[in-house]
Image 1: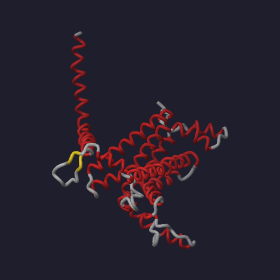
Image 2: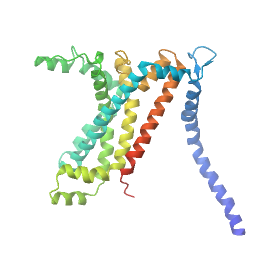
Image 3: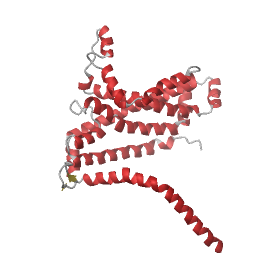
Length: 302
């Protein structure tokens, strides 16, 4: 009993050390995550233009307005299109590239890795401005080259559909290298003896990828899948802001940009807050679906 009494103060002392070490992180999370979230929920029940000293309580009216606004469904539709395109460009294609460079190619691997990762160092704002010039439908290099073959480049920034595709390509150009290098590191960690044994048995390369590489790197693949969804929500904000400002007629706007537009352009703070909460709910639903149907098939080595 006396031994237990002597150990207990020591355990409490060690626990307090752990709490003190966690305290700075907890404070940062509280200031920059928990409090903004709580305040956003609070603002979603008020009508306020960020200028008036008073806020008018409207209950769930902001949510009703958001859900009854046709623009909301157009913006969420755009958001899912961005996510779908980026899942192909920033998840599936980097997976294939990393497999080919690590397993199939024998030479110049360092060059390919450096070349693919290089755009990750360049600001997305700079990239957006650069692509605005390159893809200028009148005087840009691409338009000039197409003109040599008698082809005309569409005015993509003013055309529904095209504008989302081009903005997705610009975003992908920036983040492709990061996703690629993460997946490459995962594939590079797979036992080379296992892959060589499969190749000695004349197993086709595509079957090695599907049956060996994909399952054994699936933990990293899930991570890339989730951050690609985040990129479709968040990263694409920059080219939208720099190039189209959500136009034409909200054809390029996504959920994150629309919340910014509502609060800092239209000064509808409550409407923006309600839209933010609904966006968060949709993201949580996507994560639940991912954990329910995808996570169960993930291979964890340890």
